[in-house]
Image (cartoon, one colour):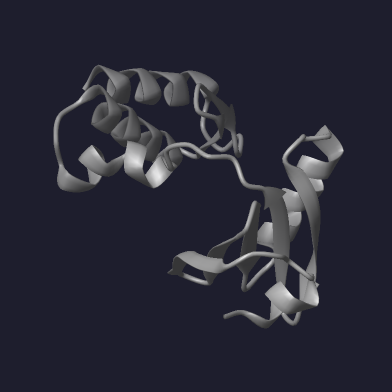
Length: 138
């Protein structure tokens, strides 16, 4: 498995959960390890640390990339929640997923599941709000 598991002295049987587009996600015992080719895992770690998130453990650099460890929390993954959208089903989850995608296209970034924040001010906020509203209506 990944050498960081030993380097970070993580205890437990490693289980590869995701490896795609420069992001590797491994569950090791009761710890989640996220490794990214770039700065993303480190930036997430900085934010979680600043927020005092209960599940945050540590983050750092590894070669040209970064890593983040968090306490594992059992539950349904976002990928599984959005699975109907991957199939193209027309469900509330699918419509919400399309909404988020359309919001990103008009330069909005989601802060969490229920809100959006402007990423840039290149378009009037009302245009962005109208686009999000249209996307949510289907």
